[in-house]
Image (tube, rainbow, N blue to C red; front, side):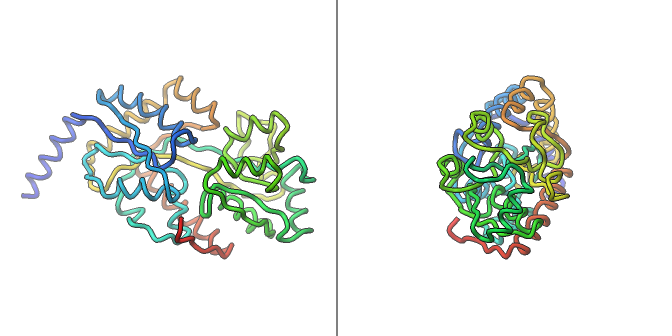
Length: 315
């Protein structure tokens, strides 16, 4: 019986794919994750010879879309594009309808993207060092916005609180766009934002960029220093994206998907499009992506505990 099943799985892997593939993005259309998916999916479809249909399932910091994939059949016809929230959700102690590690199979990392610390020009700071000094002088009087409690932006702010010994007050929003609008309007002092929506506002003088959250400066904005070189050594808060499948997917299909996605990410045009959005294309083995997810859960769990955060059951 077991031998017959293995043979059947091998045949399935050799013939794959024979129909269209559903590519679930657990964020809303038009956001940075959706933009990435619309660069990747059509090229993956060309490589596989079948349609790859993007299915946006936003809500609950990626949990709704992820749950749909966790409950899907592990046959290679349902894929999930995840972001950093896939690791920060369990770190926050959120009650999940799936097991983050057990119910998925890693395919590959796709990209990483530094975040950007930005402030309204009315705030009298021009560097992270100055922001830290101001926060120490005015404890719990300087606030920062994020796309929601437990989001990667939120935890990037809490990481600064923990590492610099300050207390910036977190103001959560339902998504990045409304948060950015309120920072632009001066209703909130600061924000950790992805690069693509923030940089046009910085260049127009409507916002001030203090630092990026990667260890090294971005090639796209080499003039902006890192948080680590601005008085908080070791600080790093990268947003990443990758592809998962349901548990139980045949190994041959995992290897095929990994190989084709790596080829897509090696192409000049996708790399150019991703660079315009502030993404650094990445790829690697399924095992390397597994290790990334596990290490990110450990890192952000420590930050959550050090900051004294609690899960929000209404997310």
